[in-house]
Image 1 (cartoon, rainbow, N blue to C red):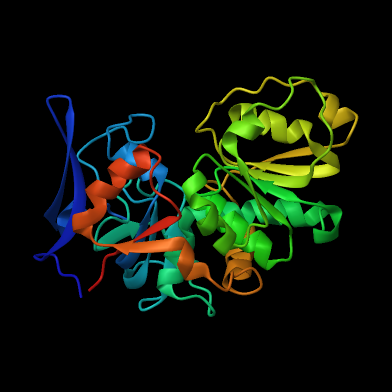
Image 2 (spheres, helix red, strand yellow):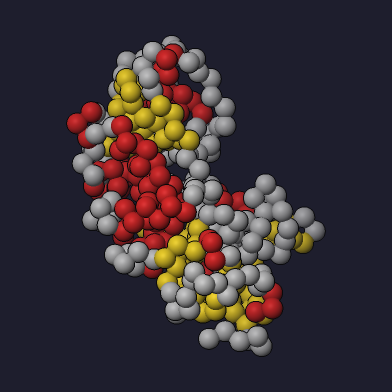
Length: 333
């Protein structure tokens, strides 16, 4: 049990002469935010946004020293809220966690009660962080797809398929019976993607070099795009009538050069995915599906578990685009 005179471990980022230094430190409990619930973190996970925060990206984190970690799961040790009980297992993702509020790369966090999602009965704490924000984003994307697209309607393409959102999208959609085409720039990862359930592998260079015409031959009934830019453009142009494209990333580019033809001649839906500000009722529904009907049989195969001491190395790899799947941080011993 936490006490005011004790300390806890946290992975801290400090700014020194324009450089951003990373280290595991002992922090006093007085340094935590003055908020409604105190959560002892059992697991967190590494996301691209965490790597940006750890590198001094002021668009993500304005002030330092700071503890990244936009995902956390653990047990409530103190609560000033009637809606969250001491001893309850909760997931905390999205909102401001790990951005300008100290995040899950620590043994304890203090957050508003409204940020806490009860851990579903059919989900372990580790599974919650194998999903994390990436899995929740994948879940939101799948939810938009299944509204209008059935497995019998045709192929679903997933871009950035070796990344966190992409890998989990491949696994979930395959589990639900969809024929998944995985897009990757890494030829060496074909076996990994096939293991997740992908039926076909499309190299990034192939989809980037599609014809420049405003509309192309329909290839896909739907898509989960995690990268943006020309890949998203070409996915939209090759989506079948009444198809759905869920868009949740911009690592390639924030710009789209398109006509409106895919939308007014084929009725294609471009669905934006914003996991950070998702309403709680929808959030609970998505987590419930991820815990049960949508849970891939080989969920654990999408993730690697690490310790505090390995975080800095993994942050460098994710920034270089060399990290595949999900990276889960084990916090509690």
